[in-house]
Image 1: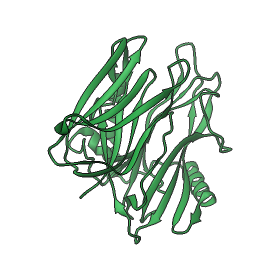
Image 2: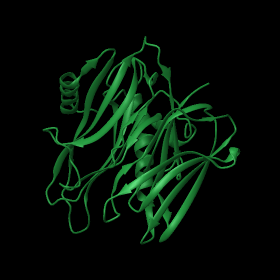
Image 3: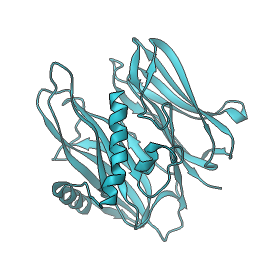
Length: 319
């Protein structure tokens, strides 16, 4: 489909851009992110809280043909909250210049964003074209799910890491809206005793554009992953679209044992996901090399659709 070709072209273009050492952040974005990070950094004991804005993005007004969109815009070398640390939590948002959240009340929708670390191999798509983006380590839709790792765990950020970001936004309103993707991180210094986690991206449309088709009524679509990142899962979160029931990971090698069931809370009209439950534990579950983990994406839709998603992001500490 057209969107898949667009995403592929953007990611492949990443290699060309990086070979020329092209930084994609505009002067406005870099200045805004630096100002925001400096102004919003707070410290409690050894853990710091740092808020970084990415943008601005101006979403066109909706028309009779449909919502205005910022369609899978790729930015390279985006700002990190620190250069040598462990990230212990992520809290996503979409905000206006004044810091207030941009929500469906104003017509603004955070369809999705994906963050990837360029010089790290992605656990599930490292050999595919999507692997050119790097290791996908955090993402959010409009449900804006926060994740905090159990005490003593974190995602390692090294001084030479380079981050990329893919952003997709929508505007249901009648006027253009200028917004920022905002992520609040808690971080700990690299010299502290923190156990590193590795992100594992599970997707019904693995290594594609993440979209797939469902029929009207109830459906449960599967995708299997042969474990190549063994260890203890300490956190897991999911993402579905409107009419989604939830996503669940099961260990088929252990008799369909449930690992995590991320349940969707929908708006009254069923078209918008308001929240997704998470699984946090030390551990949530343990997985071994060669086991089969099955992703279930469940919907109960009033109509067929060809653009839904079923994604889970897990964080694994190797043992």
